[in-house]
Amino acid sequence: MKKIKQIFTTAYNKKVDSIGLAIFRICFSFVLLCDVFQLFRFRHLIFDKVPYLIPSEIDFTVPIILWMITLVFIFFGLFTRTASILNYIFSLIFLSTIDTYEYHMYYIYMGVSFILMFARISKRLSLDTLFLKLKYSNTRVTYNPPKKTSVLSYYIILFVGIGLVYFDSIFYKFASQMWLNGLGVWLPSSVAQITNTDSSLILNQKWLVIFLNYLTLAIETLFIFVFFRKKWRVPLLLIGMGLHLGIVIQFPIPWFGLGFCSLYLLMVPIKCWKAVMNFIRFKNPKLTFFYDQQCPLCNRTKIIIEHLDVFNAIQFKGVQTYASDEIMLKNKSMDDLLDNIYSVSKDGKVYEGVDTYRQVFLKIPLLFIFSILLFIPGFYHIGKYIYKLVAKNRFVDRCTEDNCGFKPSNFPVNNDSIKLTKTFTLKDLKITIISFGFICLILLQFNVITHSLVWNKMKTSIGLAEHSILIKYLNKVSDPIYNLSKVFFGITTHAVFIDSHFEEYNHTIAVLYRGKNKDIWLPITNNDGSLGAWQIGPVWAKWGFRANAPKIDAIKLELSIRDFTSFWAHKNNISLDDAVFLIKVKKNDNLSGWEENALRNQLKQPWIEGGTVKWVNKKFIPNIMDIESL
Image (cartoon, rainbow, N blue to C red):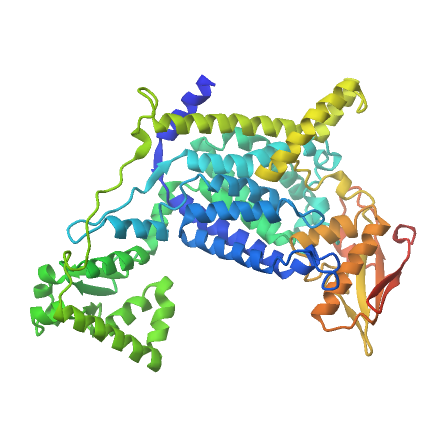
């Protein structure tokens, strides 16, 4: 424990710019927002007992909308700590309780959302930082909050979001003949029921897909041991981003791939982010804004605009100091300059009053919509009236620090040095908690590994039967801990794309509505056998691995078709008092080894009849054939 504390103390004391954390926060919250929107879109399919016919006991519409609003707050860095706590609670309510529609990314969301409650993710590119500037700044001093944070904020998110996931995954892949034989990348990408992109040009290059297979194994094995080392950072970043962008292209789980990419952004060297920020900033500002240096309101306006102006499009100059040097303002008196707002564009145009703000908003993306509004006659005149009202009041009773009630505050200090005892500081407490938490995560992960294929094979090899007293006792202790780690921290098994997912997966199932004039394909499976529009994220996982599973469970298939047809009928205003749906099936060859054009060959297979299902007076009547015997 002492050695671990020393390591974490060294890492805690290493401060780096938090720009990478800010960009990660923006990207990760956007990806999670998109996935939550999918949850909202399919909420009746996922949560209703029978979609729209027997609703869920709780209407989840409002909670999911509130969750999306919470993620918008995190995106903009507004009340970030509170929003992060609410996001974790929402994740706990929804993601940890979804059963048949859960998919792999939900676990990553849980683990990362837990860490975000404690990480300092709003020190850059956030409204929280803007509020700090406004709170502690005055006409004499502008407060700039610290931009650096402990490198641990980067490492812990990477450790939980990627490291533990990869580490557990290898305990399945190294027990999978598919991966050991080099087919782990090729086979899932060649199954029509799983993939949404025909990448035969790449899949037909046997040497390439085998190379990508073993590269994936190598990255997942090494990542947790080397991701924090500087010399490994860029290679891991490039390979990891490449592999997960491939997932975005190949499979209908874009937010899974992009979610991992957002995590990999934490590995981008800080100097690269600084170079990007310098590149996008204008060397010569587009507009010079003259403000009253002795006016607290003007100074706050300056702080707000400068904070939002990431492109450095606006340059602020104090009237008292620089107005006399500006040729374009030489005909303006000092009183006029103090009582009104003036700006000068790069090409020498002078703007006054609300027109200055219109130009400012036009040049700042986050405020662009306000500029558009000020170009609309009605809104422009309202804005002009409000501006003149404020200007008139300032003229009568000029705003100063005394009459505006502005009281400068002392700058906040770092609380790490606060002593809890004579020799124990708050910093020591933080490091102790982090060290203890790290050990707990490791123990929880090793407990999860006892559920892996490698562990099961090892038990068999040493003669430990599953029903032995020792194994039963270990499971009695392990299982409750496993359930806890899965629900609260997303630490669970990561048996992704292994042999059992594809053995005997030789059938594609489609559902059609028998209309008066023509049959309509439900957006589950297209008429060529490719994935339909609904098959994305959790819906893809439900249909591809649980309903239309490698080994079909007739009851699960019937219930799934019941739910999908009920959901589709409501969306398309189809009455379920009398509706008939057809089941179509394609029989494909089992993929046991590499072959050219495997995916295209499956898509060419003809459809055969697989039965019907009927809705009569909102009662579901299935008549589905034995798919596996066709």
